[in-house]
Image (cartoon, rainbow, N blue to C red):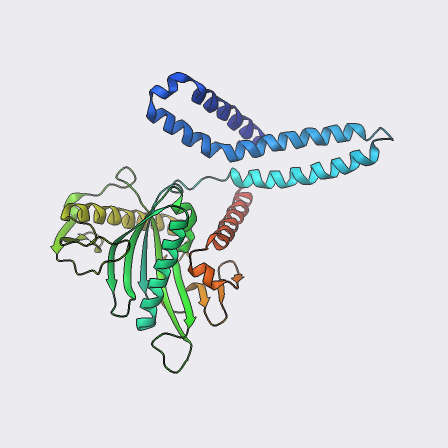
Length: 357
């Protein structure tokens, strides 16, 4: 019954938010309107599910009451069974909706891709992954901006760091971190042999100064000439910036903006996000010692996903999902994979909550 009490309270709060949004005086304060709209969006899924649950519970009671009527008994039994099944489904849906939200879910993300094992072919694959995420972002009307890139002569990237700005980017892309493995015949291979290469992906939530404060005395700044090539999402520049966080040795470069000041601001944003992620990871590892590094070492056996081009097959090893439409995935059609990962994460968190509770 504790769950029902919580749902009733959320329903009342949702009604209050709606009433405040209907009041003309609310619109004199744009910041309040934005906050209430955000609150309404966040509450809506669970409140709508709760109201549907209440309606089906009433249907169940009505069907039960009709069972004593011989003329209505058969119809009432059918309605009763349907209502029971729907109530069970809604209850599971509500349990998921009541799971604590990741506070970073609405945030934009910083993505870092590095070529791992496989030389030039790994660099070409790293570029293919960048293209895949860019196309996924474009389809969702998110903005992609490259912060730094180290390109190879054949069009690959040894490493690339880019920002995807968009509402909910972290909620969709946070499970992409890890080692991605590709099996294909490289363009540089004349004998037609299949090669295995890897690239590592790290996805970080873009955090601001409120989330994580940096001490300026801990940061050394170096300025150097940019040598990056141009491209669809890249601004040419002449004043690249390198930031070194002395306590941790973390190094961040940004060379894509037009001015040194812009590059410094972007580099600070990336550094802040990296250090925040490191702090969160340390906290999680204190609770779960066996949790492994997000990026790993780039070796073949630490894979989260395999892209097999000869078979047109993608396999996500964490959840045992296999799809035979690799071409569309590489063109940014990632929703089926991401939805499955989100569902698996929710199921895991539900199990953990039930064990704790």
